[in-house]
Length: 260
Image (cartoon, rainbow, N blue to C red; front, side):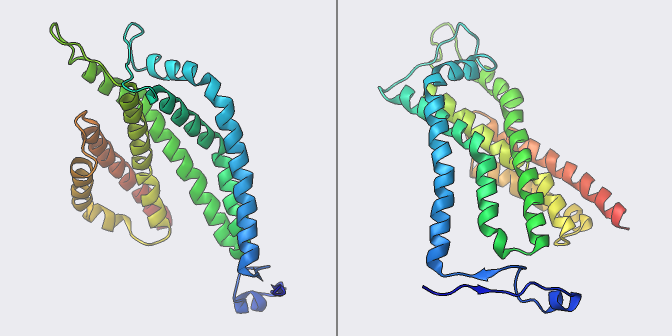
């Protein structure tokens, strides 16, 4: 097996300037990297599986609370149109729960795997980017569930009339919830990405401000032509994305003033 080549630890400023790689970096055989990657994957997949198994028996109760506590009236019923539809919804909910509770572990294991190859400033940058990004995503998903989805669901229910009643598919409703949560989670990254780009001096506040109508056109085009849907979610996403872009412009202007 190939011997490890340990880089000397720099002791002076001149040593740091002449350093060709991260402090304490080691050149390891690709096999050892793959073994470490497999071990870290196991550290993630086992808690993920345990969380999924623990969640599944309670998925009926959680789905009832998730759907009827905030979205549907208690007297309304949802329908399934295949024998495995309800089971697949329960499994998907269990997977999503397991993913949510293991996100901190996923971040930790990912950081631990790439940490030896990063400079100290890059390690700090990784944490400063990933943690706020996850928080923005959670905020967007919560906004979708608490404010957007109740309005969309009430709009769908209003189609019911005297002649025909709306029969909503459980799987499609859950897919709508998932699609809306993921979409708004991504949209809520916009101000953070703008701030990060200005901080890294990739763009300036003035450049973003001058190109705002181009970004508006891109947002509207993506929402209405790529992720278009008949429920009206795309229209709300486009409006919220433009509002968040304006919020990002406000933050980047404050950052620009602070650096002057």
